[in-house]
Image (cartoon, rainbow over all chains, first blue to last red):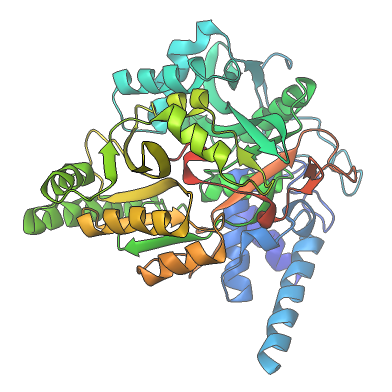
Length: 88
Length: 403
């Protein structure tokens, strides 16, 4: 997954709009760019991307999903974890 | 508490990059003010977005929950746009004990945002003011025992954390009462109508009625030796039993007569109290609760609290209730009980409902947030116990405002 894909989702589906455009390190959660409903929709999108349900209690939202880079890292980490669990 | 409402940009810092230019464009600034008596009618009015109940019932609920609360005056934070109240977050007063020390703790409840003000960052603004004000008032933490999915995830995004599953177990089946926020409005409406139709058909076919009607008839028809059923709490005896029983020091709500008298007066719920006495002394009680809805008779019931001086008494209470066979579904949070009680529930057909955990269907848990600095080493502890370990909590359904 690349950054552009996440940016497209945030801009076109969630209508996140910040001065100067979204960057990899733009704060999404702490800045309030994403409101409650936006976070919920982002969560559903991430569930779809990783291909399984997520237990919200296992996610550190303010850090795990605060920026585009952290979202990408979270998705990669979750996929890796699932892959290694499947091969065990 | 904050400045005059000012639609448009907020000068929020983009925290991770330090780039102050990258700020949300569509956020609206609201004035957030604490509740005072002048807002009473407004608060009751906008609570229609939470409940289909009549104005009269919503007024009774407000009176009970906030004005009659035995612990604190109303802790409600209101977001205003101009002179109009467009959102609110309320906290009710609760009193907890841990290892013999007592703490007043605000419990998050009623969150309302008027539809035309949603998706503008209003919840975060209310919560930031609330967190600051509650910390100033000296409360150590805030908790939430009744968060729905969207509030659950929004809370996590604002630094709240969960303690672990309360382990919702159920006997019988019901339709999922929780809304699915990921789906569209039309689809939700169709689902709601479908559930109503199913409920109506079931009642026509089975002749089932609101649960306590069947329950009360069954109690009269088949009385059980040594078991009494009442519509009201025997507050002194119940508190006396709680005090008499061994206490392991876990975090639990203080169940004194004052609390019990007040808590079971919730006008939006109905309760039945099943008591077991021996030689005039209360040896156990099991409280069943259900929603007292005006328009949609419920068929699900909950064991909202359950105490007993012995395994035999505990089993006798449960078996009496199950033998009366009055409910289509009966649920309880079992994490607070020891292994023998969980085994008792399993033997009687209680099964976990937590089989499909997801963002839109999170586990029931204790959500919490320290009100001081969350990065302090002891921020997530109370009375020396870790708040994030569910094994340190003894949480009954009755502590949640959802019952």
